[in-house]
Image 1 (cartoon, rainbow over the protein chains, first blue to last red):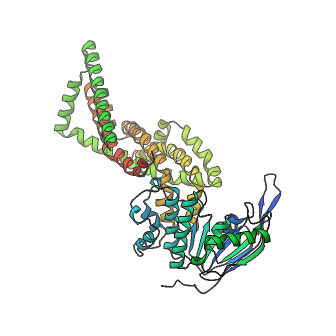
Image 2 (cartoon, chains in turn blue, yellow):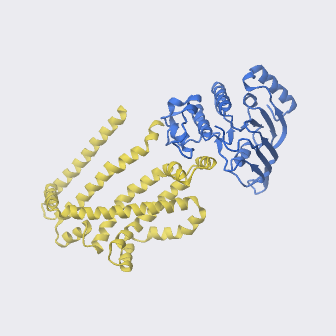
Image 3 (cartoon, chains in turn orange, blue):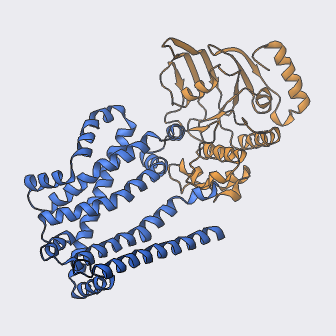
Length: 244
Length: 257
């Protein structure tokens, strides 16, 4: 079951995005950010805070239209957004939260998706009963259930302990290989990017701009800790200040 | 579960104790006064059953209740819509703010008299006047709620391109629920009090009309019988409709503690 527009690339061209500072002077947040996302790819935007990562995601999702540039997406794009905070409706159950975003909620069965994310037996629970890690899995299910033309992941393992974060990354990788959505991941965690992405785009702060691009052609399942550590060390040497 | 049941149990006991003490104080006062102007509870109760048996009381009660429901629901519906609009849009708020302040401060009686003078002594004028009295109250409360809506959830709804129906019923209204409940609570009691005034001034049926009649006859017993019967109806609405609705709406909160 392929989704419409699956073969067209998604393009992001942000010439310039400015904010008004506290004293009214314009501050350039992002400048000259050009990205072409091939269908089914997973691109990671990496950089320290203040390099406009989240701003970029908001622009791509259509939440911020006040910028110079253009975003190329299939017509009527379905965008699955996994926010940093899960942003679930506390008054709806897990299953209702996932079904909420479907056009005809009775059409699709979110069962298999909940199953593969390990939250199938929590369908009837309310988000207030879930830990952050579980709530984030629900938010990932909600983003995937619409078969998104573009999946946006904003720091998916932020504020989780290392063990939980590792488990969540493995799950993300699992569902990503199952569904193959074109994905843009934003993170400041280089290990996370090296675990999940097939391409890294490195950003420098103030204004956010691209300083390097790295293709990771080793298949994700073959990336062990040694490889990740070696690649990280190499990147730290090549891009000091951007990668930590 | 056990503690919830236990607290409900204590709630019932508290209710019975306060009702019993009210009747006791009333009986004592009636005994000391020993006057036609302060009949004892059982006298009033007797009058009430007689009026119910004759069909009089239920007839007027039904008419008053219908007016209360009509005025209350139109005030809640229109007030919520305006309140949400004022809470979400600065322009709408600026445009309507003066109207709101004026409406908040015009005495109920003035609105009722003007409605009757301008639109005649008819049902629409009566219900409209009551609704208009309650309206600003609903607007102010719901506006407060609309201002406090979570921008994160709003962005989520936007990113997933949710339809306006889903935004309203799944995202916005559940957030406004405590404000709507507060407006409904204070609204119901306010509305029925004003309905009595409207009936007294310009209608030929309903509890307010009957109260006026018995006032002219100086029949305090019947006045109390009619007033109390409506208090009981309001109490029933509170316990049988409003409280279960609220418990249902708050199901998800139970788990947070």
